Length: 290
Ligand code: MG
Image 1 (cartoon, helix red, strand yellow):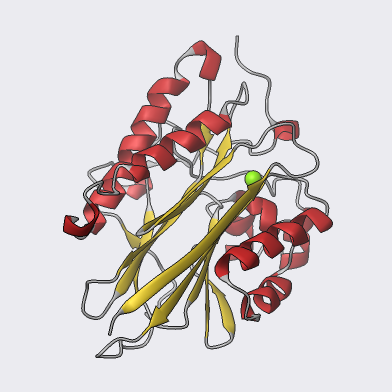
Image 2 (image 1 turned 120 degrees about the horizontal axis):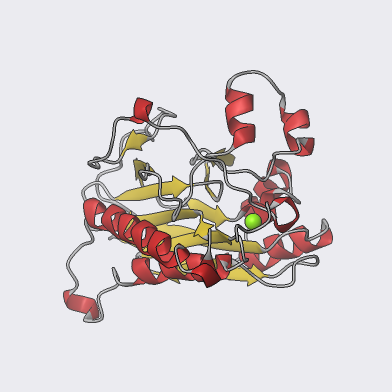
């Protein structure tokens, strides 16, 4: 007996934005959400670039496909970062970037595991044992203020810099990917989403929806509808992945640590770096440089 995956995905421009700059990939075993941003507003290009880079992990030969290695996944994210940065040097695409979050179930591992990664404020959640847990941590100004105890959750929702991320792909900064290797269990329901969902729908309502017995696609559809009903101020993208089946040797408890592992990447030491916040919303973007 082994684990099976069922999944569903939906993206929507929302009610306020002229264009959908989110992108997603939902082709097992690679699931990802990207939320683009840009000076001249080609965030859609940047988001599509990282999704296409991750799509190259899918083996066209199917049954003979070798298991995907963690390092290869993270390398694709780094390649996309470089490619977006290069493309962003073209005047027409100046300053474009994107977030990315991803889930790569590794069903052939014993015990089965999942690679989770993120850059920016697109999120990965896990609904397990009737509890919703945010696995990824936002790389955002507001998250840093929360971590420092300078604002509380209520202030975070209204904070003028709530759309500003501190890490993104394409920035030209050394890339720092947060990633986790977590166990995978039957009954797990994973959620990947852009901030357009969590701006409009609180965690309790998300948990209620995920707790319902609806199929993954229906769950994705309903979550997007909740965000639209909530105002739809941003693009909304949702990917839901359900794990079913059984494992012969149950896994140990989910890694309780909240600190992400750092991807082993040859860059400058962390303390050499100054995060460069990027404007996330069209209304907050600085004028494009000449
Ligand atoms: Mg967004």
